[in-house]
Structure formats: structure tokens, C-alpha cells
Image (cartoon, rainbow, N blue to C red):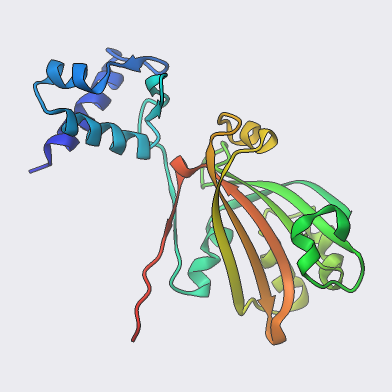
Length: 238
């Protein structure tokens, strides 16, 4: 039997589906809604949390709880117990290149701690979508050192991730990945691409990909809408 809060979640979804409630409507406060449904306030809070996690509701202080989607939104799940799983987002989502340019090391903070044969790097900016969807759930800026900058013509004719294009073109493979995840306010440009509010909380993942002998392949700065992206880790000592 489903938990009571899950039944409340389903009831809210049914109200939206039937047209009783619409996208853009605000739900009553937790205490008022609990009295209306005949359940506890904690049950309503759990239901709201579940629906917010699935992208149906958005809760904001002093603004209340707003319906932002008619049904749960697809979410990309990224597991992190191996290199292949770390790279799964690159293999299993679409990368759409929006611009390619050359940047100077002094102009991009993340580059200043890394070595390239020249002071210039290739910057590839794009967005990520899940299969059969057009709305991006993330943005990605990838910085390629001079040793692999010859990949530029290939990137203009493929939707593959940058690291995949480099692997195929140079016949090499990623064998080490480091990454850091940080919660940040969404920059205006990225918010516009993903269709979310500027300064809304998002996840930024900074990653460095290496090939043999710790040779840097690329640096990646990716920003994800947390309502459509989940990072999962399962690590054990064996």
C-alpha cells in the first residue's frame, strides 16, 4: 500500500490532469490544504516535497507553492562508482554546440591552474538534452588545451560530447576524471537556455578529464537544473 503522502501527491496530480488545478496556480498553505484533505500538515509537506523533486511544484518563501508542470518531469540520473558512470552523462545525453571560440588563459579562472602548450584554449559552449526532448536540462562549457584543439572542425558536424570526439579523432581514452559539485545561483545566460529563473539554485560540476600519463584532455564546467538532474554515489571498500 502506498504511503499517505504518496496518495496525496497522486491526488494533486489527478487534480491537475482533470483541469481542477492548472499550471501557474498556487496551492493553499500546508496547514489549510491539510485541513481540506483531512490529513496532517507533515503529510502535505512530504507530498509537496515529492512533487517539487519531480518538477511539478515550486516552493518559494513568501510566494507559496506554485504548480509549474502538469506531470513529473524526466530526470537524468548520474551514478558515480566508476569512470564509465562518471562519463554517462556524456554518452547518454545530447550535446548541442552553440559556439566555438578561442580564449586566453588569463580570461578564464578555471584555466589558470592548468597547463596548455600555448596561452590559448578552445572553448566549446553548448547545452544538454535528454532523448526525445528539446528543452535543455543543463549547459556545458568545455575547454580544450592546444594539444587537442585540432578537434574543432569535427565538433561542428557532430552532437557527440567533446571528449568522445577527441577519443575518436586521436584514438585515445579517458582514464582519470576529477570533479567538484557546487550549488550556485544560476547565471542569467544559463537560466535563459534552461528556461528557469535567473539566480535559481543550480548545480555546477567542474570536471577535469585526463588520458594516460595524466595528460589533460579537457576541462568542463557544467550547470544543471536540479529538478531534472540527480547525482548518485555508491562507494564501498572491498
